[in-house]
Length: 372
Image 1: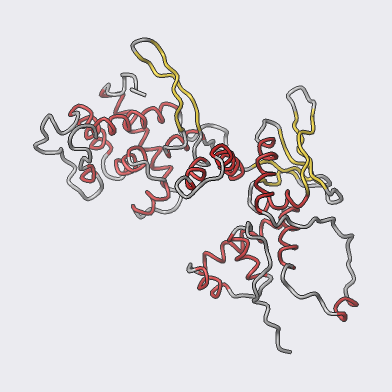
Image 2: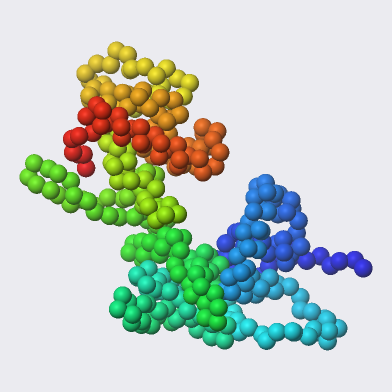
């Protein structure tokens, strides 16, 4: 019997992520991985990873419900003969229609994700519930309902990876993810700016990657508090991550050593010659001085401190701190440019910062306060 062509476009909402469309195109649309890869202009292995990722995520009740509904969208209904043979073996799970309007999802996200960001907050939902509720547990044991949302909205949040199931059972519990917090920051940025135009459309997306914090800096008149973006530096991001034992991956003294090097690097850029030739300190280049640098070519002391630190670290370690601490390259970018295996950069960076910290302790170059 000849199989019907089921590669038609799915009538799915426009907000559905591209990875979900690839999954549905393969599992429900019957398209091959190579065909999807040609359509998207990527390698078939990329499509395979996305398909496997969402196949694994079907253990999540909300994700499974949403994918089931999206898989049926746009497909012709079963014939009468098929309907006669259909005998469901389990009780049907209550499901709500997915929200088709992206504006509704954004409006609900600003309301619900803001509540989920509060300490001790989670979404509780059961198979027989048409609504999901946001509950917040307080340190004294009390709990309070802070928001209510439709089941379809909760499914959309799960598909977009804004919430993740932390506890399965008769009543499933969901918590906000890092992607959900980033989406909330972007949506609040858009709301603060009003409807973004062409000039500032990217500003809201940049806001989701900012994580503002405050710190004190020492000045002649006393300490002063400043506001800064701790997510700007890859080192600051690693400094907030925890290992399996709950300890910071980078200790505060290692982060301080990285900030000291970055400050000297920024000071060395000041002067008539803004772009210094730091590439000579990368692997395979002449690891010497600048040669003939006059007093007008930037603060010599800061330049010499950076050069001395990079020479002490040597090839490899010096490359890593220069790229991540000074050029602010991401770890994945640094690994790719240096030809290293994935997830090895953070280990090398930690070793390099330990050596850099020892260099500052031996030379006394890191004893003074940061400029801020």
